[in-house]
Image 1 (spheres, rainbow, N blue to C red):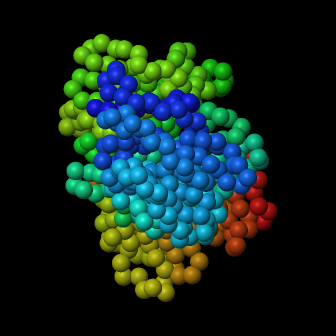
Image 2 (cartoon, helix red, strand yellow):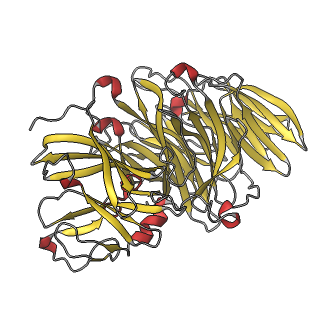
Image 3 (tube, rainbow, N blue to C red):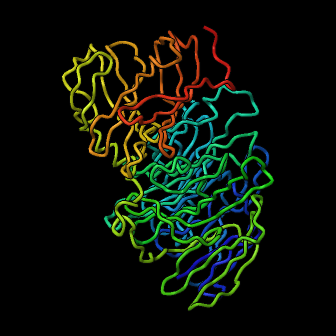
Length: 537
């Protein structure tokens, strides 16, 4: 199985421990990833300066034939990122459109104009047959990040938006967040359907170890297939340390359609940044569960088939600033160093190793189901009386029979599918070994929105309790209340929510816990977020 790696100055194509071909490059991470073409023939990367030259970048598209080792170099004026889009074709985005190269033909690239005007440059993330996933700040809402499918003819189509955390944080500058897009990977499933995975994270400027990462998976038609916020560990069972970092630093698909990730878990110590303990381990998303593949420390790894694999191993002691690693080839139980100062590793295809699903072996100890599976279950769940509407049973996530001018009762995860991770949670708050479910509901009597509710269900979807966020703010009656974060922690659900009156008057932020007292669900430890100034009443 061919594989390739990048250092800061060289692209090297390998077969076993043999160098097939190599090309000098000037690699900068801002140019995106090392890619493989969909036909399994070429490795390619953008090479050139990261800084602009007279207002335009002048990188080159450098490719190495995985079979012959032949090197190609194509001028790619003002190119910013690339993605494979089927066969030997590579799509590159520029400041005024797209270029499409065919690496099997000695022809100039085809040029396609951009269809939309963007606030920030569009960045190609990963590609599969006929299309690529791209992202940029939403041109219609600067508080959001927009994801697009870009077809190989340059036609763009927005498929999803997510919050940019730094846009919604009202604290002092030292505590503000930064939104980061990490690695991305695309595949064609055995069914023929395309899948795109992308890792994102929010970082805090005052505390570099505080990184909250997630992995989202999209289909080419825009469906959000999976959305895993690693720090919540709602079904990941990847738990961070105190004020720790948890993010995916590499993503790839195997040939069965399972997604693999290298997850960094930096505990940063209980209170001292200098006591950091940094973990890099491989996990696999299989049937909606994140399962550990190996507890061994690795920057990334790829199976080559048979008993062979290649692995990037960190130099010990590991530090968060490490950017380059040693590359080892494992064959038949022996290990050989085949590269050093390696930044990126990729293969044409990644065979799958057999993996026993713990859910089939130990159903009691099985990780909880994914939030998207939970959302589907709750679409037909019973609902108590909310916003003065009678109790009933949901149909497709909403309470039926309410006239259009008399409001709504519906799962927040239905109205805001991009924020499903913040509106649903799973946790064993009754301590009986069976997890309960918590869901945020939106409701109103028509016109303006009413305060949101949190409804807690048993595993059998029996209602255990409902909390009206409009009645809990230390005895204050408020007009609006909205959840910012709902997650589970041991024997409780944790809430972060905002209350306000009118058009954003008397804004206050709160944290609280939902606990089971043996008979009902109660809200406890309600506290104002003192580090965030309230808007005066």
